[in-house]
Amino acid sequence: MTRIVRFHETGGPAVLRIDDEQVGDPGPGEVRIRVSAVGLNRAEAMYRAGKYPVQPQLPSRIGYEGVGTVLALGQGVERYAVGDRVCVLPMIHQGDYGIWAEEAIVPARILLPAPAGLSDAQAAAIWMQYFTAYAIIEVADVGIGDGVIVPAASSSVGIAAIQLANWAGAVSIAATRTSAKAAALKALGAAHVVATQEEDLVERVMQITGGQGARCAFDPVGGPYVDTLARALAERGILFVYGGLSGEPTPYPHWPMAFKGCSMRGWVTSEIWNHPHRFDAARRRILAGLEGGQLQPVIAKTFTGLDSLVEANAYLESNQQVGKVVVTI
Image (cartoon, rainbow, N blue to C red; front, side, top):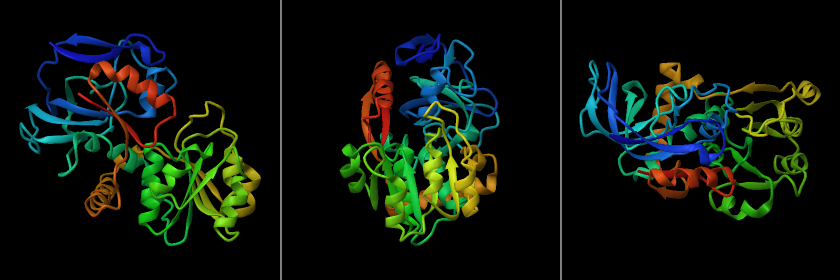
């Protein structure tokens, strides 16, 4: 029997339970892995709470990003061998599989070799954040001198966006609610930090960009504040909305967008994952950045053991963290 984490009802972190279950053998195209570490994501928290677009079928497994070691191969799996250290990418629908467990079965197609030189915690904290933030490179094509507004900048994706913007020669503008995390964000590479509850974002962005506005804003929050972000954009700027953390309806800010010919678009990482040529290009760029040091996963806090997942999720949702929350198994 193997210890796995499931939830039998939706709700807060306390609904997570550890169950004993027979993992079994991997099916065709699958592998069984021993899980070493998992990276926590806001999407998992929303799924567990019943606030994700896909509703869980209870009881539900959970967890879809991490790192582990291959224990067994299913029929037709040729790319990997027993003993390989692999990263699990969140390229599946939540609940179809779940790696918050001592051992888990996952499709081989969602694996990548774990980059050499990274700890388990670091290897569990790369793919979701960098593939998500890659929109500013692939779609917005940010370059030298372009302003990039990063709301919720202390999140793992926010820090990834800052690193990618800096690598491209753009000007990273971290947006955070108060100045409490300003020093940490500056230390992690943010060229500028704006505390949105303490100062006027639009005014600051215009000062930073010489009145031009930002090339893009990369927003996981949504809600009415998109109107402010739109007013801070440059002509033909792009407002990405890749999450709905505000819990409020997200209006289309027509006039700020119309007067400057800006666009507002949604973004999910499957937009890359579902297109092999785009996936490969992004994967190679991210690996190059990891090897060259331009991209460095930032771990906010590491928890130990399946039993710590309730505490780790509560910490994630407290908004105290700067970087990725990781649980080692």
